[in-house]
Image: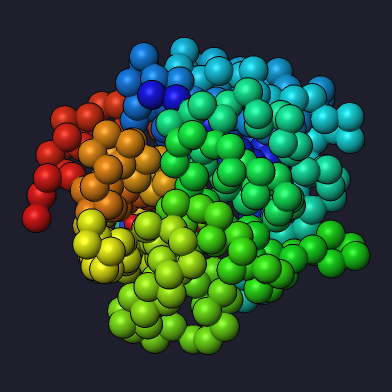
Length: 313
Ligand SMILES: Nc1ncnc2c1ncn2[C@@H]1O[C@H](COP(=O)(O)OP(=O)(O)OP(=O)(O)O)[C@@H](O)[C@H]1O
Ligand SMILES: [Mg+2]
């Protein structure tokens, strides 16, 4: 199995409420590391990204533990590395500022990977790929196109500060994917209204499926996930997936990335959106118990538990 993951790798500077500062690489790195652990050693994960020379060795070191990750899709960006600062204001709301903005990943950089069984597009900076590239990719990709809406819903002001927005042409973007994933805020922004209960998510999921995708997933943090999917008879079904119980939440960063990795790991084998949602939900919940990238290796230890999950009713 071959999976390409398209999106920017950010250099994040995180200022904690107490004043301490953390430097880390983020973006699609987390998708790649979780997927590398969930998939077989014989499978290959191809991150497709742009990064500056200044951070390339760091990125290579972080992915070195995974022989099933191929770095040939990572291009050196002449603009340097995409840099993002994250701090929390008095109300503990995240304030993000993008300092160094990169040009989008071009179609020619993606072209060698069009034979992959799946292409996962995860918007990190918001213009990771442009609409023309997405349209060309859709027309020429052989495998599943999975879109994690994520920061497509974040605009950037003149000073680099990020703000929630409904992306332009969002219906076109959705219509170009087979599977779409969005969190609660993203769902609200796309729907253009408050989402109050499960029925709202199911109705909106149906609207997305009508645009072309066969699966639409709304992730709801500690409330679990709701998946609407097209049936063989061309109708739609919905699965309301309650959260997996988590004894102690350590860090919820990257839960959406872990969810996408879990979904793909199962869906590429069974093509069953119900089983894939269950595995994704378990993967994301397990991720809450880990303290970031250094602990993602624990997904391997949990392999047996994982095998049981997707079959459970
Ligand atoms: N406290 C929790 N307990 C159990 N599962 C959780 C919890 N928080 C998150 N999850 C799981 O993680 C999934 C994704 O979470 P969420 O909706 O917050 O994604 P996201 O906002 O895209 O995350 P990210 O910060 O990675 O972008 C949820 O659907 C759920 O399966
Ligand atoms: Mg997300």
